[in-house]
Length: 375
Ligand SMILES: *Cc1c(COP(=O)(O)O)cnc(C)c1O
Image (cartoon, protein in one colour):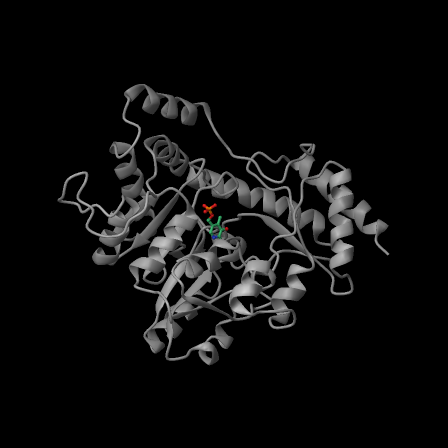
C-alpha cells in the first residue's frame, strides 16, 4: 500500500511532459540531438571537458572502472556505507573492493584511514558523496595523487552540491551521476559520466554503444561493448529537468531546513550532516537515532512510522554485510564499526520537492509519537 506521505517522488512539469511527447512525435528515439545537448549542458555545469550520457548511474560507474583498466588482481578502496552499486561496479570487472570505514561526522569515507589501506595492487579510490555531502573530496584527490591512484567520484547523490565552491562532478579522473526518480533530477532511468580525459571519454562513448568507434559503421565493433545508451526520451527529460536545477536544489534546501527546525530539539534524533548549508544539495533526509537504541528499535520505529502512513527506509544496510559481498569478499560484522553503528540507526524520512510544510510537520509528529513507543 502506498503510504499517505511517500518517501520520494519525481518533480515533473507539463513542460517536461510536452518535451517528451515532442520527442515521441519526432520519430527519433535514440542517438539524436537531445543526448548531445544534455551532455554539453552537464559538462558546462560541472566544468568538465567531456560528458557521456548512459542508461543508469550503475552503467556509468561500470564504464569508469573498465575504462580505467581496472580488472582482476586490482584493488579499489571504497566505502561500506553507500548504495550497493558503488561496490558492484568494482566486482563487475573482477577487481577487489577494499573497504575503509567512514567518518562518523560526514558519513563519507574517512580520509585518515585511506593511506593504510593502499597496497601495490591498489589502482583507485571510489568515493561516494553520501546523501549529497561533498565532504572529503579535496582530501581524496590529494591522497590519490600522492599514491598515483585514480579517483572515481560517485556523485550520484550530489547533483548541484559544492565543496568550497567546486561542483560535485568535478573531482578526480571521472564522476558519475544517476537519474533514478528519487534523485535531484530524473530521466526515468539514466546516468552520465564526466571527465577531462579525452581517452577515457572516448572509451566510455564506445563501450556504451556496443564497442563501436566514432568513425566506423554500425557493425564495426572494435572492442567489447555494452548497450548502455540513454534514449532521446530520457535525454530530453533530463535536459528539461536540468534547466530547473537551481530551483530544485533551493526547494530541497527549504524542505531540509523545515525538518531541521522541527527536529532540532527532539531528543534522541541527530540531524543529518550538512557541510556548508549554502552549498548543500539534498538527496534524502536521513536522521540518526541516539546510540542507546539498536537495530531492533530502529526497525520497530520504521514499522510504526509506516503504520502511521509515513514512507521511510533504513538507508543503507552496510555493503560489507550483504550476502553476496560477504561470500565474495570474506567480510563480516565488526570490521567497520562506524558504518555499522550508523547503519543500524538511520531513518530516511519522506523527502522530495513537492513536500509542503504541513507534511513535514505531520512526519515529525509521527516520528515523535513513534519514538515514545520505543522502550
Ligand atoms: C543512485 C545511486 C547510484 C546509481 O543508481 P542507478 O539506479 O544505477 O542509476 C550509484 N551510486 C549511488 C551512491 C547512488 O545513490
